[in-house]
Structure formats: C-alpha cells, structure tokens
Image (cartoon, rainbow, N blue to C red; front, side, top):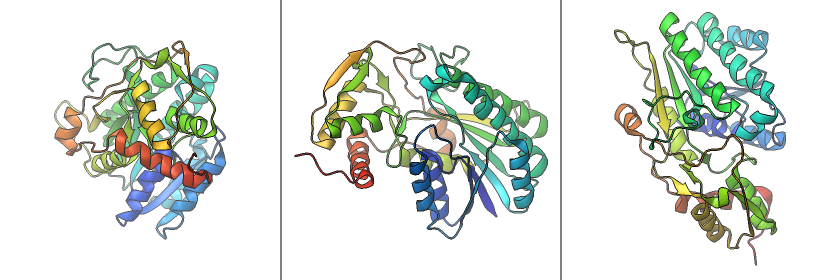
Amino acid sequence: MAVLVTGAAGFVGMHVAAALLERGEAVLGVDNLNSYYDPALKRARLGELERHAGFRFTRLDLAEEAELVAFARAHAAEIRAVVHLAAQAGVRFSIERPMEYVRSNLLGHMVVLETCRHHLPKLEHLVYASSSSVYGANEKVPFSVEDRVDQPVSLYAATKRSDEILSQVYARLYGIPQTGLRFFTVYGPWGRPDMAYYAFTDAITAGRPITLFNEGRMRRDFTWIGDVVDGVLRALDRPPPAEPGRPPHRLYNLGHHEPVELRRFVAVLEAAIGKKAEIRSAPMQPGDVVETFADIEATTRDLGWRPTTPIEEGLPRFVAWHRAYHGMRVPG
C-alpha cells in the first residue's frame, strides 16, 4: 500500500514524503512543478526523494481533473491515504494573481475530494494543508481552532478557509475521514525562496539590505519543518472517527506556540550567518497581519504533538543548509 503526497516537490511535501519513506512507506508523489519560484529547487527536492526505492513521481496538474482521475485509477489498488499539500502559495501574490488561487486552491481541492470519493476505494484518510492565514483579522490570541474565521484579509486565506468548508461537507455527506492542518510560518532546509527567512538569508549573506514591514513590529509563530512533519504524520496515523452529530473531520493548529518578533528573528539570523543586516523599514502590506500565535491544546490532546525546536536551534540549521545548497562561503 502507498500514500499519495500532492505537492511532493514543495517544501513541506518533500519533507513529509521523505519521512514517510524513512519509516518504510511507499510514496506516490505528484506535483505540477510550476514556476512561482525556481523549478530547479523543486527538481532538486525530487532528486533527494528519488534516492529512495519506494518513491515514484508523476508530474500532473490537480486542477486538470482528467489527469488526476487517470492517475488514481491506475493506482487505486495501492493508495491507502492522501496527504494533500499542493496549493498556490503566497499571501501577497494572491492579491496580484487571484485566479491562480481559485484554480489551484479551490478547483484543485475539489478535484482531490471528488477523486477520493469516486476513485480511491481503499482510502483510509485524507490529510490536507490549511493555513494560519484563515484567522485573518482576529484580535484574540492565541488562535484556537474553535475561533470564528470569517474575516480573511487575503484571497489566499479565503481559499484555504473554503477548502476547510468543502472538506467538512464531503466528510459529512460521503463519510471521507479528513484532517485539516493549519500551518504557522514553517521554516527550515529546502524552504521556499519567497519566504522572509530565506530572502533575508540571501540578502544578508550578499550584503544587500532587507526590508522589515511595520518597522519589524510583527510577531510570527515560526515553526520548524521537522516539528511540522511530526505533526502531519501523527495526524495521518489518527483518522478521525465519525461520531453522532459530528462527521469524521478535524482541524488542528501546527504552530510553535511562541510568537517571535521579527526584529528578534533577524537578530538570531544575523548571529547564525555571522553578519549584520542592513535594515530598511516599510509600512504594513495589504493582506498582512500583525501577529500569528497558535493555540495547540487540541493538537496536543488528540495527536500527542508538541513542537521542540526553537529558532535558536532551527535558524542555524537552515543557514548551514543554505550555504551548502548555494555554495556560499562563511562571511569574513
């Protein structure tokens, strides 16, 4: 039997697939390898996974229903679970290119749901990626999965919340066990170059200035990729049961539960790089929020999950990978 991982060439997808392979699972990976950021990084991630005999990759676009249906039919006898991580990422890009998010995040999610419903008879569990962005303009912290999430401040957030609602309906109508995971600012090796920690590392290393929005007075619940992967696998291994009046669908936060102000984050990054940053300030950007802060009580209770890696450990590990991947020398 095998686990289907969508977005397998992505940051979280690559790490989840690797962890599944390391524990002896067969993994079927799919990804469209789009050019939102350099596809060479995505191909390099796949190269790491292809070292494992249990990994098989197919390039396809989830929004093209016929492609995923044909794939599912060919592998229906072996797929026991799906970890759906493919999506168009990026809050700010969603303001510029909204239809990309409707196609990838809404239509793509619906195609996955319909494929699970009609073409995967041995499916035990669908785990899918949501986002802390669904909490939008909420002022109460920490953010709890019990909070209302009807004030999104970006189209990206709106698509992720819509995915949660669609999954809730499919769990209720068709009994498909599903778990949605709200990720909080995941960072680590093989990360996305558009994320602040990666872009800051590029700039500081090269001697270019970095821009801190809202003068750096933003707080983020930075969460180490290894902790996130542990949470994904714990969720995957615990399909939610159907209970009276409650369909088999659950939502959980995967965040470090310790927000860090951006200026402190930069200071830890400077120490890891061994070089001071040239900092420029700018106002808040549209679609951004001042703070993210995960309430992980339900995640700990139901999944036994707690993060263990602070930024003082995680950022130096990322910087070491960054230097190795980009062939950069230590400053000085």
